[in-house]
Length: 162
Image 1 (cartoon, rainbow, N blue to C red):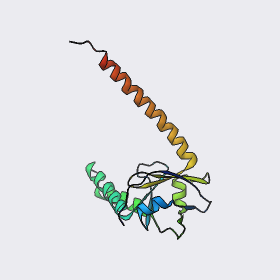
Image 2: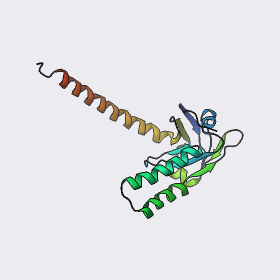
Image 3: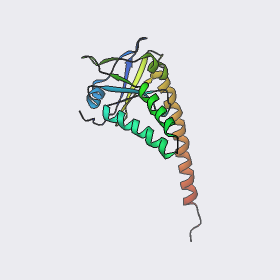
Image 4: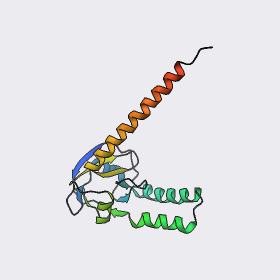
C-alpha cells in the first residue's frame, strides 16, 4: 500500500507495558506494517514509517555517512544500530500496538499519554509532556527567528535611497 500524506495530532493513552492505540487515519496512510524507529535526529521521539520509508531512511543514513567521509565500517555500524532498534509492528484489528521497552525508554514515554503526530511522510510518537516542552521551546525559537527577520527587513527598508 502506498503511503498517503499524514497530518494531525492525536493524544492516546500508553500503559506501562507500552500498549497504545495507533490512530486509524495514520494507520491507513502508513499501511498494515509499521516500522517504528528512534528519531534519527536524536530527539526523544519515535518515528513510524511504512517499509519504503524505512528503507529510504536506512539509505539516507548510509549516504550521509559517505558524504561526510566516514569509514565504511562506521557507516555499517550506524545502519546496523538503526535497524536493530527498529520494531516491525502489525496493529491488531482495533489498531492497538505494543512498543518494545527499549523504544519506550528512548522516547521517554513515562507520563501515560502519547502525542502521535502526522508529519507528511511519517508519524511521530512523543510522550505528551516531553512534546509539550519541545513545542514551547520551538515556539520561542520561531519567535526569535521572526523578530530577527523583521529587524533585517526594517534595516533594509530604512537604508538611504539613491
